Every structure is written in structure tokens, then in C-alpha cells.
Length: 75
Length: 235
Image 1 (cartoon, rainbow over the protein chains, first blue to last red):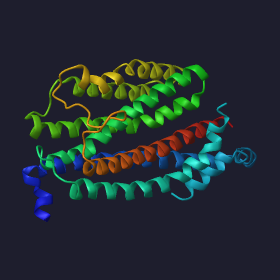
Image 2 (cartoon, chains in turn green, orange; image 1 turned 60 degrees about the vertical axis):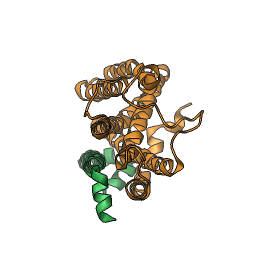
Image 3 (tube, rainbow over the protein chains, first blue to last red; image 1 turned 90 degrees about the vertical axis):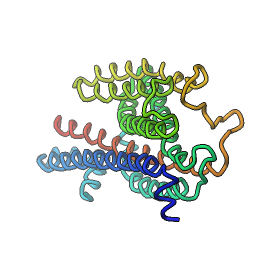
Image 4 (spheres, one colour; image 1 turned 135 degrees about the horizontal axis):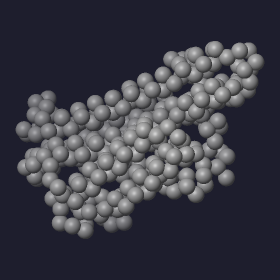
């Protein structure tokens, strides 16, 4: 049974390489996208941290800024 | 008209949805892989090599679907002058491009045992390669041009010109005598694929669609935070 799944009547190398390529592409795209997202979140947090009290208060009025900071604290 | 699509309003949804979509994707992909690699039957002619269909076909469908969406969004961006459409397009394109590459590579791997060659300048394969070039130009334009107005115009033009290629990809197997087989699944007529193969194909298509949704959500959130970063600079 295991041998049949691996060898697939001699077509195993074709089938497994097609599936491997797909899964590796998925993993690469996922991690690259995740990395870009984390980078922008960190950049936002550091910029937000360097604002003076008045500007930070003004920025906090926007819900989206609060959401970004909330998500940044989780990374 | 498009107020409910405003980034500020939908960010809370898109940022929370990611983890649920990731979970659902892993579940559906696991079921799909089990079906595709173990449970589905081998083909009487192609034997086990037919299993490549379960990654090749959904990848081709989704890359074509995403390019069609980019076309609609580009036209909408021109007509309604709404920059959010451009942001949505930019977030959709990377997964469309990766699916296009997957379709080309897995098709090439499938071609070797079936046709005896890795590559043929056949109408379907060549038009898919042209689609990949349009995706490449689109993504490159976003990297090269700094001016927002200019990049939206250029990328929209690339997509609208590239849209001419979409029906060619779809109908190339009907219009010309190609090495590539005609489509086995038709919405309007009977399918020439057995249910035992249609089920894993549908599950894998759902998994791939979930993956493109996941990447879209992550990329869209990244783009929104980039916009907000520029907003903080202006404070």
C-alpha cells in the first residue's frame, strides 16, 4: 500500500514533484507575505511610539490605528 | 456608493479573518490532499499521473479568475476613480501570479509522461505563459513607479491589454488543434469527468481559493498599514 502510494506505477516522481512544487510555492508565498506584514506593523508601532502626546492622541482617534496597534502587540 | 468598502471600516474584519481562513485552508487542504493522492482512483489511460490534475487545474482556474477580477477592478478604478480598487488589485495579483507559475510548472511535469515533452509551443500553454508575463509586468510596475496616480494608470493599462488574452486561454483548446486536451468540466453541458475525480478536484479548488483569500487578506492589510505609515509621517 505505502509502496504503491510512493511509486505510483513508476509515475511517483512526476506526481510527487508536482505536489511538492505546489506546496513549496504556497509556503514561500505565505511566509514572504507574513514577513512583509510584520515589517509594516513594526514600522507602524515604532513611528507611533515616536509621536508626541498630542499627535498620538490625534492618531488614536482613528479606529484603524488602534486596530493596527492591537495586532502589532500580538506579533 | 462604495462607503462600506472604505479601508478604515473593513480593516477590523480583514485583520481578524486571517487566522480563521488559515485554519479552514489547512483543514480543506488536508482533506483534498488525502483525496487526491490516496483515495481517488487512477485513470485507465494515464494511470497515477492523472493526480497532477488536482493541483494543475485548480491553479490554472484561479490564476485566470484572479486576472479576470483584476480586469474588472481596473475598469472600476478608471470609472469610479476609487483608489481602493487599485489596492485590492495589488493585493490579489501575487497569488494569481504564483498560481499561474504553478499551472505552468505542473503542466510541464504532466506533459513529460503524457506527451513525451516538457514543453510545447501549443496555444493553451503559450497563452498561459503570456498571462504570466502580464502578471509579471503588473507586479513589476508597482515596484518600479513611485507616483501613485501614474502607477494606477500603468497597471490598469497592463491589465486591460492583458484581458484580451483571457478568452484566448479559455477557448484556445476549442479554436485550435492543440496538444492540450479540451476542458473536461463545463458549467453549461455534461462533464466528461467521473464523480470520483470531480470530488477531489472540487476540494482542491476550494483549498486553493482559500489560500488566495488568505494571501489577499494579508497583503491587503500590509497595504493599508503602509498607507497609515505615510499618514503618521504627515501628522
